[in-house]
Amino acid sequence: MALLQISEPGQSPDPHQRRIAVGIDLGTTHSLVASVRSGVAECLPDEQGRVILPSAVRYLLDTQGKTRRAIGFDALAQQAEDPQNTIVSVKRFMGRQLADLADAKSLPYQFEDQPGMVGVVTVAGVKSPVEVSAEILATLRQRAEDTFNDDLFGAVITVPAYFDDAQRQATKDAAQMAGLNVLRLLNEPTAAAIAYGLDNRSEGLYAIYDLGGGTFDISLLQLSRGVFEVVATGGDSALGGDDIDHALAEAALMDAKMEAITPQDKRAVLVAARAVKEKLSTDGHAHLSCKLSGGMLSVSITRERLQELSKPLIDRTLVAVKRVLRDAKVKPDVVKGVVMVGGSTRMPAVRDAVGAFFGQPPLTDLNPDEVVALGAGIQANQLAGNNDKGDHLLLDVLPLSLGLETMGGLVERIIPRNTPIPCALAQDFTTFKDGQTALAVHVLQGEREQVEHCRSLARFELRGIPPMAAGAARIRVTFQVDADGLLSVTAREQHSGVEASVVVKPSYGLSDDQVASMLREGFTTAEADMKDRSLREARVEAERMLEATRTALAADGDLLNAEQRAEIDALMGKVGQRCDWGDLEALEAATKALAQGTEAFAAQRMNRGIRQALAGRTIDQV
Ligand code: ADP
Ligand code: MG
Image 1 (cartoon, rainbow, N blue to C red):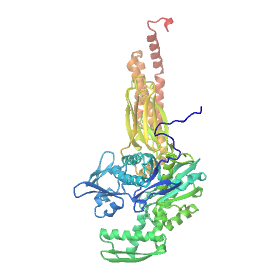
Image 2 (image 1 turned 180 degrees about the vertical axis):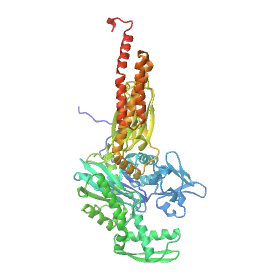
Image 3 (image 1 turned 30 degrees about the vertical axis):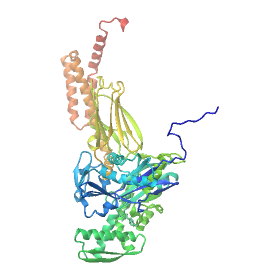
Image 4 (image 1 turned 135 degrees about the vertical axis):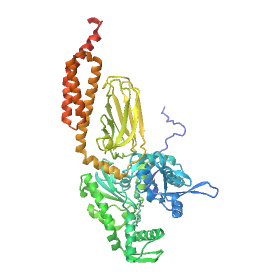
């Protein structure tokens, strides 16, 4: 009889069943959702046919005093009237504390420092950036569910490559709050590369040039065996199309010998300048006109004029590109393809400059606003198992090394930076003192050798270690980083099995500048750090030697005569003194002298120990 295949109700494998998965670009100024439909990735439009959702949430009270929210275009429409309650660019506050926000004073919000992350005071109460982002994500989730008339299986959400643990965790929390199943977080440049299908191209280095409204990001990705790794990232978190608007507005006012006096004037001329700038991406000339308190401003602007004005800003992006290439130790001509992302890359001057720099025309076929969402949509489709070509693996790397504090305030690196994630690495440690039953675990991030120069991520204690002689315990500390770059650390005493762990949810984030400067400092101070490290290690060794000698003297000091005792005391005194000097060789010599000077004493102790162990026993019993 033939075997009959049976399956549980509701679990029957249906080869035609598709899981709905989307990619979401949760952007600073706008957000999009994309999905693969009939084999092609596309951005999903709202009811009015707009694919872009402004990343803006306004909190307000209705006539009955109930709190309400306006999201996207609706929120922006009233931003000028109610700036305090209209939250834009919330991405910049994700996973940050007030102290991290350099320009908090110039923003129209009333911030409140809350444990973990800064909050914004609104008529609807204090709102965390996570909550605000969740509103945006929930709106896009609703859009997708309406489009497919079905529940979502999951979403891939993009984050900047330089986002740290705190910022990634905040993004994940927002997605969870919005009821999304996060398939994974994906780096924005990697998403853009996937959108262009670069993962199917020849192996090598690719550059992603992302010039938006307020930020510039440059990333180098290495493709090998269908897998992308972020090799280097850089950019400028305060450089973008807005700066070009400013330059153009100033030039127009100068030409007309007028001034923008009131805040309304300033806004009006910037809005007009932006429109002219965008028009000049397709047209040869345009007219800038707007009403100011001093009269009508009206000037004609050519594309050449705009190019002149934007050149210094475009040149600044190329300086950042050069720096990243230098970091990666490569020349521009090894780059196999350049992907353009961000609205400002529509400017012909930007395309020309980037093309000339790399000696090849950049990839511009896809809409630069949509490219990140499209790549995320393709990735989501693959992760949901809808891809016949089978899964392909995506790698990202750790932006900064992770390690532990060891004796002497030194950092033991457990996972070096640029390790592809997910990853797990373990290292064994032991106790320092006899009978030590607890061990403090201090998790750090950074490239420097000393604890005070790295960022503290978490601390926890492993307790209940059975009392043993110093050095006898085997404590294995395991660092695990999941596909989203989140870290968990576990410490386990191998003999007894006692265990403690933390999932690192850092309380605040680092800015990309801070990451960059931590990396830079790590490189430039490496040599000084090594010297310092040797000295600290020597100090630890000296302390260990002193501690062991003290213990021995307390237990078996009676074995020594006064002269021997004085000799050992003198040797200990020397080690103690040298510990305070900065002289590595002197300290090592003193420690060595103490070790040699106590050898005879150690032998005597051992003999006594054996005699005691044998006392009262016959040879047969041994
Ligand atoms: P962000 O990533 O900062 O959210 P975007 O990628 O949406 O920003 O880019 C917004 C910027 O792109 C704005 O400065 C806008 O003026 C500019 N931009 C959009 N369309 C064009 C265009 N056609 N020509 C020139 N600049 C444009
Ligand atoms: Mg962008």
